[in-house]
Length: 239
Image 1 (cartoon, rainbow, N blue to C red):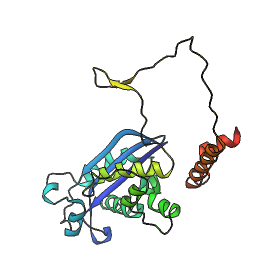
Image 2: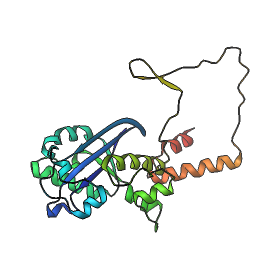
Image 3: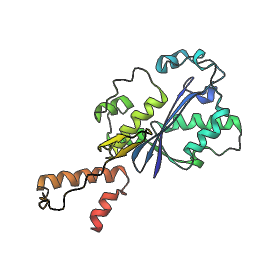
Image 4: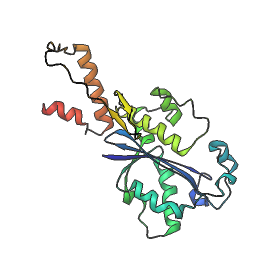
């Protein structure tokens, strides 16, 4: 399963008023693991950025003067997201802007919903935490995800943070800690440590009743967030 956590920054709030995308950031998840593969681009919007927007993301027209236009990067961007499941916080905003940009290039181009399925983490958060604040900052605090390095919004940084939030919300793991080292080519390799043949039998520790109850409660939460399709619950029922 390939998912792309996506965020954009724009010149203003309304695509219908001619506002444009100025930054796109994407983070790839493969089988619910951060793959390390990202896609990021600043974009020349050919219009002024609203002062209020600059206060949010800090991106100025001067800084975008030498950047490509959306039409110049559209093919590469679409190839990166094609067929993936997009994970977006407040998806109608970002998808609306992306569709607006595609329409400007060619009215016949398939829109985002024709290319990818979309998960809206804001809708998911409101369902899981009704009546609470569900901004990205609020979710970081709720799930104890460090976003202290985030002074301004940025598409790639927000996508990276959202990836951690999404995995935490759905019971995933954001990192896999294994002993590894970098070889001479710069590639990361892992050492396989074999147990001696004459080792004593490994001690089997079974879960206590409280631990099993906590495990079952966690699986129930994951199952609800996945709409009843949690693999672990299916394995339990078939096992």
